[in-house]
Each structure stands twice: as structure tokens, then as C-alpha cells.
Image (cartoon, rainbow, N blue to C red):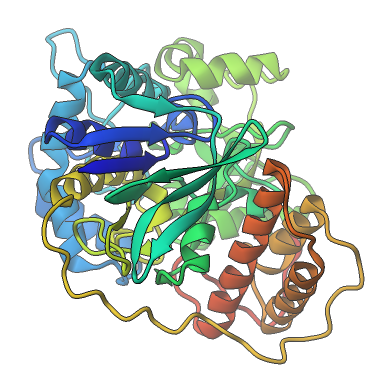
Length: 490
């Protein structure tokens, strides 16, 4: 079969390799160059290696707890059962994970994990190592790779996908396919502060929405608690807190225990909100104190963070560093079954673009790279198999009579600020309605896009409307979605 994989992170490249090895003709299409995207930026590791006293069942329990009970139990079961095999596969494809002197994989622990079960590469460069290994593997197959190609839309024939429409070098191009795998990542650039690289604008999810494909859980946006509070944004891995670093207020007190008994190792949504509230109370950023780990340990265990923080003028071995939350990961996305199939025959979704049900209301640390590898492989295995009876797409979240929109012209900066203020960490009914009305007004006035930047803006507005709508319809606070009577400034 002729298969097109759109996206070249861990999920897309895993799907492409498995599809190629199954005998399909595969073309990888990527917005930038092969291996670009969020995978290469991932500092955290891959969960799924179970040491003494640990098990897949305990990993599943931790995942369900972090997801506030909304994770799909069957999807979580698949994730933890297939994890060790996918990690072994990454090793076989050339990914060099950190090992002890006796050759055993080093296992780390991160927030909300009950055991050390996470493998890393280069201390804090796991995603970069995985991207390197998978990119080399794809190049080695000789499969077709189309770089610098922007996904404009899906081509739909009747009720099934039949290919994709691209924008390359300013020209429209069409590719036919028997199956399309969307691995286009999330939509971090909906927000004023994000850990995501440029170009993470929800292109695949927006294309799916326009084609009538079902989406779910878009209201669940995970904010990473600890981004260096200096531009440009730079993520300080959760593994730093896993090694013993603490979060302190302007008096030096560890304030996160006020919100959760696990303190700094509580679920990400809890820690992020605690940081936002404390920063608002004291009128200055909170700080991450890693000084107790010492300069040699920090340089060895977190070489990338150590180098970048020093380049930014911070000596984190001697003094605590300022941190702030930022939009990090989208738990929702294109609704799929356990094999990556969407509600449109022939269309698969994997990685952050997909809503597999694994993450529920809040993603457990180091489950994202694992999810990409596990479900990328499963989607490839399902290509060519009989398509189940398509689910009827659920009614798209529509809220009428939202509010009076803000009377200001659209710009990407204005959208990102609106989303940060009203559809971010702390949400109110009035704020969500204001955001939705404004987004709709901006969409109505947006001219037909003709270049990549304009298409990205249009996609961000599609995702913004769907996200604000979903957030309004979920009136109860759960996981990363938090509603309160009055917004606390962040």
C-alpha cells in the first residue's frame, strides 16, 4: 500500500519504519527537515523499564492517577505492556541510553512516578538521541522523504481519506495515498509561553477538524512547571526535581507542599498552578534550587541544562534559578482507537496529534516519547487491515452567545496572549466566553491564507476555538483543566 506519514518525530518515524518493514511504500512528509519537531527537544526520558519492586501494573496505576482517573484503561494497558519492547527496539535502532559502569540501563524517577523506571540519554538529551537514531534509520531505508512541505489539508473522497494537499516552495502539491498517518504534534504556539519549537501550530489536528474527523479532550493542555524565566524559553527537566531539586518562594520556603503532599513531585498541573499562584502572591518568579546537587553532578547528569543556564548568566550550582510554567503538551487531539485509527477510514493519528486516551486529564512524565513509539508501531501494523465500522464523529463542541469580543485586530501575539490569560492555567467562565467570542470574530475576518505563516495562523484559530469551546463545556475542574470563580494573575 502507498502510505504517507506526515511528521517526523518519534511517533511518525516509528510508524514509517514499521510500515516500510511491513512492505508498504512509505513517504515521510515533514514541515521542516527530517527529525525536526518536539521529539528532539525532550529532556525527559522514556518510561517503561521495570526494576526491582516495580511492574507494568504499577506504571499503569501511576498513569491513571496522573490522568485524574480519565485515562482509558485499555490504552494505558497497551502502553505499559508494549513499553519495554519499544525501548529495546530504540536501542536496536541505535539509540544510546545512559548506563551504569556494569552496562545496566540507568533508571530515573520523575514526578508522580512511584518507582525509578525512566531511561535517559545524555542525561537530559533523550529526545535528541532518539531523533538522531530514528532519522538515521529512516535515511538508511531509502524511503522517500519530502522536507519543507506544509500540510494544507486532507484530500477526502466520500467518507475516506485519499491523500494530502501540501504547500511547497509557494506552490500547491497533491499526494495520493491508501493510508495517511498524521504525526504532526501539538499546538504549543497557541500560548504566549511554550516549550514547543517554532512551527508547532496544530496543523494536523486543524486539518482533521476541517475534514470532520472527531477530536477529544482539547481542553486538557499540560503546562510544564519549570521553564527558565528568561527569553527565549528553555525547559528545565522534571528530572532535576526527581534528583532532589526543590521549588522555593522568595523567603526560601518549599511552598508546593501547601498544595500536595508530594510537593515538587506532585502531578504537573498541581505544581504549575502552585507556582503561578505563588509568583502572583510575591510579585516575582519562584525559584528552583538545585544547589544541593553540586556542580559536578549537575554538569554530568544535566549537561544541556547546565550549559544553557550558564550561557544565560545563571550559575545554578551556586544559586537558585527563576522558573515559570509554560504550555508544554496537548493531552487531547484526534480521537483514535488502540491502533491509531480515526473516525475517517484510511486516516491514522499518532503521537501528540492523537488522543489515544492514555493521558486522560494530565500526562504522566516520560509517557509521551513512549506513547509515540508504542502507538506509532501499532498504527503501522494496522495499515491494510479491515477498517472497523467508523464511529460517528461526536458533536463538535459548540457554544452559542459566548460574549462580546475584544475589539482589537488579530495577530498571532494577540491570540497567544488571549489564550494564556483566559484559556491557560487558571480559567473562568467569563474569561472563556470572552476568548471564544474574540477568536470567532478573528476567524470571521481572517483572509484566505496564501502562505505558510497565514495557514499556521488559520490553524491556530481553528484549534483555539475548539479548545475554548471544550473548556467551556467541561464545567468541573479536573487535571490540567482548572476552573475558578475569579482568575488569579499569572
